[in-house]
Image 1 (spheres, rainbow, N blue to C red):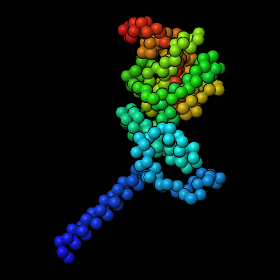
Image 2: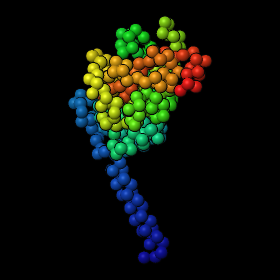
Image 3: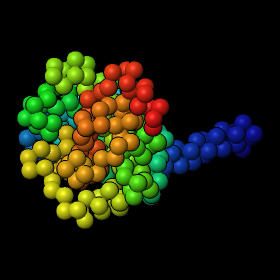
Length: 276
């Protein structure tokens, strides 16, 4: 065997080893492939699906576009299942990497609720419907291009005895000139490991009642009213730049938070921030 033949042989051998190594890495990262729709007998996907790896690479190239992920989820239940456990997870990691690392730092490979719910919370202001959570206020929900979530701001929404909990809260989404209500702000957030938080423990110890009808717009879980439980600190209105008696928020069983406030005029809100 001449030197050229030996070099060619080693090249092909190394290439094969590399492919095998990548294949093993993918198998560890991606769940077992499913080529047919195992959820619905009426599904039209009779010729088989693309592999999960192919879809992973395609959406990685598309930078985990949330509209396209949602569109794919509507194709059939197999795609919906794939989106729930993989695509939305990667979307969240790309959109808010530091926040996701913190939420999973306790060792969990998932988050409270599910990845799709968290993805929606990152980019969707739920608004409210008339007669819903916030009485007669009616503001349609809408997608937002980008929202900043802050762990530091989250401390302002917790009573002193709950300050060791981790809560990420968004900046208020402003809706101006809402008739008698004035300028409204909608905000949302998520607790880390909500099942072990002092907030949840306090709500249970207080015997706080879950809302009889309304559910979380992100995960459909039942909601506690922090206002009824008397667990809204004064620091929350200061952080939001809102009237102290015009703030209300709810927390669901999965730790998603959504709330509303009436915003102070700009000059007044600046004064409130200085007092904080």
